[in-house]
Length: 329
Image (cartoon, rainbow, N blue to C red; front, side, top):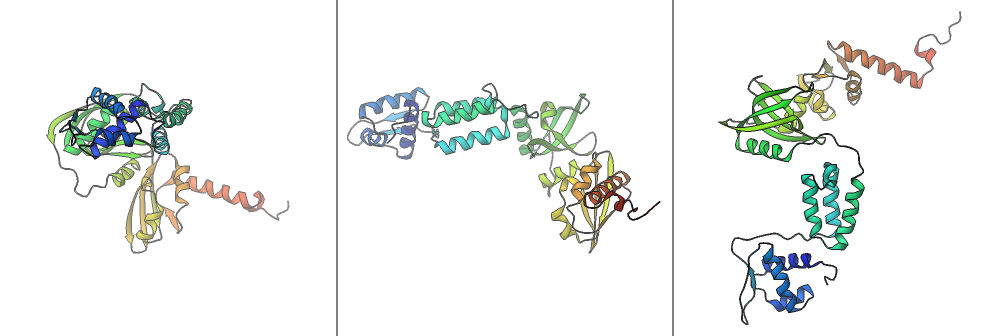
């Protein structure tokens, strides 16, 4: 029944059986594991050496049970479950193939207690992943854990943050939430010095210290929505667009990263935001299936004109686009 299990895996399965059936006897354990009753004593010894107190009672009604207060869930994965777990870890954290990385170390511990038939394909996936290129910087687990703790307990923080120029600045903030967006980790917070909402990349936080002060976060806070709005602000080119459609019709088409939407009238909506890349921004606006116009946004409007000419040239002869088709000298 369990011919492919290593001694460690059998010991973990024995632990699971004892946890689920306190007082289970050696004969029943031997039957379930497919081993002799004498071997049960060896597997009990392995579990005890791992620090789990297994108590035994002799006699016709005796058996095994886990000592009071001990509850260690065994790791019993199928090949599919183990591969899915490792692939998910590698997809979000490619350094998981490195045994020196915290995630890689955790995966290594899991693999060491898997049966060989399960561990072998999982290890192959890890080795293939080791050839991948470098990922963008990822947060330190210790830093992230401290930030999550501060958000949960509403504790203010003092931290050091590295900006784009490489300079490091001390900040005191009220941490509202840790949010993940497109694989990047952010701390959504309120900056005491700026007296404004901020979104900080956690991989740029160099140090963090819990302060004694506490705070009350906004009652209606939607962390994901607030982050999207925050990331649309503060860029080089300001954008304002008036859309000839009702707010409820427009909202599903506009990513929050483009800016803030507000109803002007029952049939018109305003979008305000900013961008570092007008061409990219215009491309996002093409998802709006309603007439719209720019207000005081010359750079983005110019990008829209360039895109419009390119699209026309792709379906019409150049002379026709320039208005000279059919003319003679």
